[in-house]
Image 1 (tube, rainbow, N blue to C red):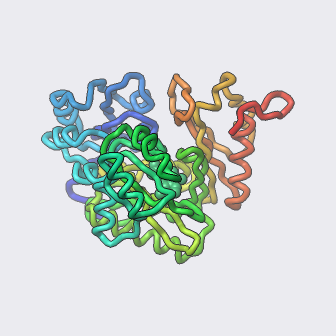
Image 2 (image 1 turned 90 degrees about the horizontal axis):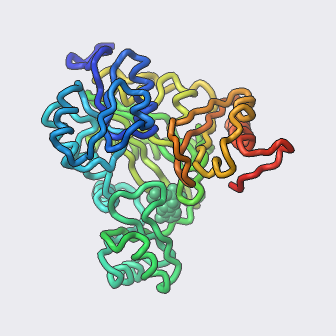
Amino acid sequence: MSIDRKAILPGSTIGVLGSGQLGRMFAMAARRMGYRVHTFSPDEDTPTGQVADVEVTAPYDDLDAVRKFASSVSVVTFEFENVPGETAAAAACCAPVRPSGDVLHITQHRLREKTFLAKAGLPVTAFRRVMSVSELAEAARQIGLPAILKSAGFGYDGKGQARIYSPADFESAWQAVGETEAVLEAFVDFEREISVVAARSLDGQFTHYGAVENRHENGILDISIAPAGVPEQVVQNAVEIAREILEKLDVTGVLCVEFFLDKNGRLLVNELAPRPHNSGHFTFDANITSQFEQQLRTVCGLPLGSVVQLTPAAMANLLGDLWQDGEPDWAAATAVADVKLHLYGKSIARPGRKMGHLTALARTTEQALADVQRARRKLTADSCGTKTVPR
Ligand code: AMP
């Protein structure tokens, strides 16, 4: 297979905007292949910074610092889509930004994202833009209740969201999203949630990791099971929707499409993430090429790697709640064979904060799910084997 003439080769330096766990795992993949990694964010001693060659600490709106950062690398990518548009634009002065600032612009704002999807003829839940309580009442009249109000910008992991069951909830929901531009979305009584992590190379080649089943708790991903136990036709439909999205957005990089699968087998796109995704973490251990290496390959203009999954897998997130009675019992959890422990190097364990994850590899997804849940329970079981942390 030929390598793009403009490929950014091992030995080069990659710049990452953002410094969380996605950047950390990206940096691990990049360093393994002989690249250097610089990371930029307002924070210090970050999950990415601990692994990168250089950690730059500056606000995203310090555009001189952004330009200096971009001048020191061969390509800029991001691990956090809420990087301001001006930051991506400033970086683009000095290095290619992949995926482009346009992809970031659409996907960091729910309303722009949903409008893009609806205009492209892709299936989404009914939605309305809402700018006040009276507009909320009118939108609810049009799309019906129950519904979910979500802030248009800067939302993730269920933050900035409020469920609305009756008109009595309008005021509190409007306050919950910060009394700012929001989207009212019809509530989907879904059968399952699935996602497709996909990648597109600089020369337009497409690849994907199939459909993954996702289970959420309080709006935060809790468990992913790969492959998802859904009919092959559903997988094909989801992959075709993902392909269309990556092509229409002209993505160079990795993008995750999250879906609801309704009770009639119909897929609805919930949201897009223009980067590796929590539901693709299993690929680090289970696939020939992880989603992080794939991000590296795409942004560097290298050929795509094989996405073959070597064994069924299940991933369980480790949230800060697990620390509420002290340090989890790592030795007990790592005693479960075929379970891999990933910790992100975060020193403060707040409830709901993603601190790490476990991935179980097994002969069946059922076994992988049972193993990963057993390993996670062991983290907080006392010496009598009793769970001390409610989950
Ligand atoms: P989001 O941040 O939009 O991905 O929402 C987080 C989680 O909340 C989703 O994965 C779903 O479990 C739930 N959720 C969000 N929007 C809806 C909806 N319109 N209907 C039903 N559940 C939803």
